[in-house]
Every structure is written in structure tokens, then in C-alpha cells.
Image 1: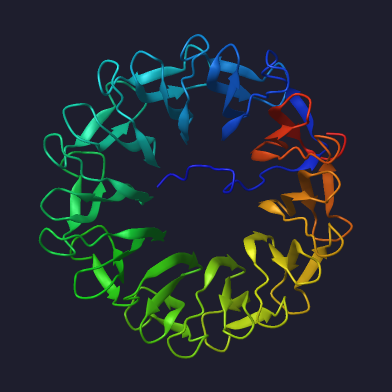
Image 2: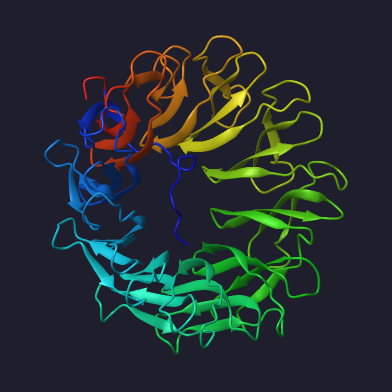
Length: 496
């Protein structure tokens, strides 16, 4: 399934040099800014949407230079907006949806040139919209769902040509929609959930052909739904959650065949989530009446699917979250009922599952957020009750879990956001109480945790967002208080 970017999901993806304004795109509107968004890297360029008084919200691209930052095409000519979205790279092609004011919201593609930015196909002919939702790429084929006016919102595919953009299968014949959702690629197939109108919401797969688009298995036989979800690939096997009607959701796996689609174990009758693969082990959170919400693991067998540790004895539950793998060890946040929500780690054994450190001593939680792995260190935001919400790091030991820097001295906190790893450097946004929300970086030392540049000047903050790496630099959006929200560039050094 495609992951659509939002300000809270963006993680800094660039490095080194003081940022500078790449281009004041919206020069006609004083300090309004062009509000660049929806960044997507392709080759040596970043593609994004930006708004000007002359063109509205359209597709732009930048190579990090003034001359190389330009409107790709004014898809909806004039001041109205085509509002491109769903940017997804498949091979050397950028796919997206847009509305040219004539054909409605349809599937488009771009090779970065005006001439090569075209509507792929008017799927719902005329001014109506097919409203494509882009899901995933399998090889050079894009899978998405759309409606053409004859069918409901069904599964489509595209190779970037009009002829190669076709309905894969009319799963619910006529105008009904199968509710295609939660799609992901495993091997050479696209797996998703759908409802054919007879079997309920079940697991399907497609190889891109009508004959090869089939329900993998009617897990909950009849018209009821098994609601497959949390689709995760581990090697060539698909793991997911589903309910066969005999109880709550359980852990399932599939090799793409009906016989090979089996329940691994009936676990988590009250809920199962947070599936993550670390090495050859699948970790997840399962909630049952006996243990509550606790950490479990699976090697794909029933015997090998078991509770890692009952952190809160009984049915209270420690509610593990923020599951992250580092050096084949799982790190997560959990509440043992005594210390609040703290940082934990696990090697998959009860003895090797332990709290790393009681960051905020006592029962009050430190509000751990944004666990991000950089090399062999884990970075996150936490409040120890003394220094406010600040940047912390951990090497997995109690002594190596430290406040990296008290950016705002005292209890106020700099509230770091958008933690992102780039090589051995962490980039993030923080407010030091003097410059407002600005762009920072850290090499893992206190002295090396510094503001890259005060883009806005003064205390207002530039509110940097949407960073995207291209080669040796990255582009991001910021407001310097003069030009409005515009496109900026940095290589991570003050001069750059």
C-alpha cells in the first residue's frame, strides 16, 4: 500500500550546509508563499506541488537551483488549480492524479517535461472523475483503484500508456464497488482486500491479469468478512490479521495459494496490531483476556508464535508501541504499571525483554515519541520531568540512554519533530525558545546537535517541513517571514 505523506509523517531526509531559499515561486503575492508540498524524489529532481497567483496549485520540480526550479506544466490553465496528488514513482515515471478542468480527477504521468506530462487515460469519460487511489507498484506496473462509470471503484493497472491502463477485473459486476484496500506487493503479486459481493471482505491477489486476479481464500466462509489487515511481507510470505469467525482476529500467513493461506495461531482475540519484522522474527502486539495487550512473536509456526513476556502480570497489558528493529533487537515503548510508558528492548526471550531505562522516574510517563534508528543508536523525544520534551538517544544500555541536549534549558522543552536518519546524521525540527521552529541536526553528541539555520529570523520560526533528499542535498519547505512558505535547499552545512 502506498504511504501518503503528511506533515506529521515526514522524516528529515537530507544532510549538511546552511539552507537557502531556492526560488521565490509565488512572487505576485507578497509574503503569501507558494506552500510547496507532496515532495517526491525522482532521479536528480524533487517533484512537488506549489501555488502561485498565476497558476494555482500545480506540479513543479527542482534540482536545487533557481533555474532548475520550475513549473512542470500548468495542467489546469489559468489561475485555477489542478491540485495534483498521490505522487508515486514507478520506474522512471511519476504517476499522480490531477484535474485539468475538462476531464475531472484522472490519472496523469510525467517525465519532467511539459510535453511528457500528460493524462494517462480519461478513465471516467467526460468531465466526471475516476478518482484514482494509487496503491502499489509491482515491477513497472502501477496498481490503483478507480471508477469508469460502468463499474464501481475497481482494481486497475497502468504501464503508463493509454492502452496499458485497463480495468484488471470487475470484481463486483456492474456499478458496485468491492472496497479494494490495504494493498501491498509481495514477490510478483499485488495482495489486497476486497468484497466480491458474495464472500465478504477477504484476501485477494493479482498478477495483473483478469484470470490471475482471484480471492486467495474465503477465510470466513459465506457472506461474512474476515477483514484481512496489517499486511506485512517477511521474505516471500505475506503475514496479516484476519478473523475466520471462530473468535477474534488471529495471525495468518499466505504463500498465495488457498492451501498455503492458514492461520498461524488464534491469538489476540481482543485485537492484534503493530506487526514488524526484525530479522526472521515477526513481532506484534496482541490483546487477549488473559494477558491484556502484550508483546508477541512468531516464526511462522503455531509453536513458534508465543507471548514474549507478560510485562504486566495478569490481564492489565503493557500496550507495546513504536516497535523498531536495531541490530536484530526489538525496541519499543511499554508500560509495566510501575514506571509509566518507558523504553524497552527484546531479543525475543523473556529474559532478554527488559526496560532500558526509567527515563522519568516514578509512575509518570516521559511521553516517548518518534523512535528513529540512526546506525546503532535510537533517537526519540522524551520528557524526564526536569528538562522538558527534548531529544534523547540510546545505544540499548541504561548508561547509554541519555538526554542528548537540553535545547531549551529548564522544563519548557524544544519539542523535536520529524526525526529522520540520513547516513549517520539525524535531522529534526525544534524550537529553542529563541528562534522558533527551525531545522536542526545531530551527530549524536551534545556539541554536534545544532540549529542548521534560522530561516525565518527572530522568534516566529520557519516551520520547516516536507524534506526530500536528492543526491548530496535535500529540499524542504520553510517560511523565512519575508517570502512566505517557499522551497529551500541545504547540504547540511551553514554555508550551504
